[in-house]
Length: 592
Image 1 (cartoon, rainbow, N blue to C red):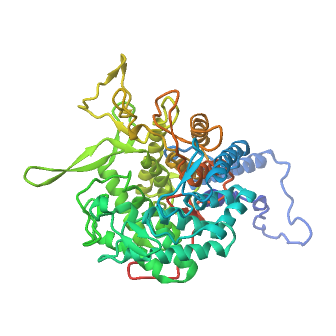
Image 2: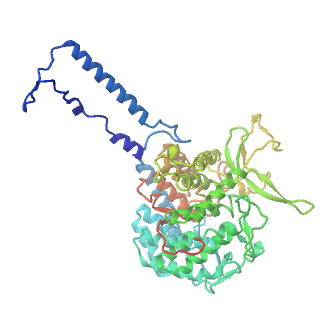
């Protein structure tokens, strides 16, 4: 119950004792205790009429007064309705998701336990380096088992961590992927297991091995790490440049490791990255996808919320939430970025008015000047942003805490209401991209714009607002056409449902789950990516991404679970869906 509703419920409405008031005594009358002092004109009809009139007038006045005291009912916030829903588990659907997880895990455990990746058709595993793997799939899955209550599977996975997990690998690993999957997975497992020290020991070992990536002129991390040599390595494919999202998506993990170990170095290294990026701010508040590790300035590269850009924006909000909303610098950076997104990237489609997030790409003129061109393209990765905006609206954009479920318009700032509406509409757009032959969303969607050269009439029917780029006849499908078991849409559905209780988000999630079961499930065990979401029968890629068990199935499980499981006000999810607890920090550096 909201505070206003509670106050109204407990407001006094008057008392019947108010009628027992004696009038003034007449001359010569004695006031005697225990009885009436005068003869009451009870039998006088005129007196009764007078009393009735006075009481009626009094009650009418109280009614009018109370009406003026009750705040007017404001219209419901966009995408919500009045009422406070009770978020209970849908046990049948929740348990179906658990069965799907077991179908994936048991196949991997049977054929490839300990390997970084799994190939369900060939029933084999593979590692990311020739020196061997570090258990990406195992560590990515452990906290999901703990959340789902899969005790036997969890114990076997833990045994592998104790007996076989090793970081003594003389090879180059992605700084970003190793942090979000392995370090994040170990830290989440430590918390959810009730403090099993094996996970913290492994996390500390990994964190120490990764610290050298920050040994650059600016403190921005190098893209790769040799874990055995404890040496950072430049990304040779991108001329030594650093991906913005990858550099700014290490903070939740290193800060929590610092909190657990009371070692400031992890926090300070991760926080320095954010200070550099804040100092490099561009006038519009948005960030290009590459930054220089040598001079700490952004390069004139694409600006987008898809690959290499997405989790920069995600972690601005989540750093603010992780430390219980105590570090206003991240709130300010987040609000600044959201203003930039709305001013420059949020667009509407021509026909249906679908909200989507475009990209800005630099174009260099013959004179050497850089001009920015909007491209109506949205990666599936962007679909995290709908739920993120709604979460931001109810925290960074809230005027009160906690907000109602669903939030009321008067509880949010103007920016909060704007972000909420965009988040709701973006989720609708992401669900529209599931309107394919398989019910699965493509990796990349394009939206039609005025003057588009794409034929606006297909088979005699008006073209849809969005489309998937198709490969040439006889050629393999483009990467745009795939569905690789991604979680971003169901991530937003989970958050939206927890913030509203609106059953439509569960309906959306169930339709996606059914499509995955129908088109991605491998009968002998595991799940596989689909190469073309608009082709039936489907053709598969022999690969099961680790984020299926870490993210997609976890978010689907939580979507159908009770609200008490991993509540949003007590946890933040890292970008690989590893839940980390909210805490009050003890460290304060100059940046904070």
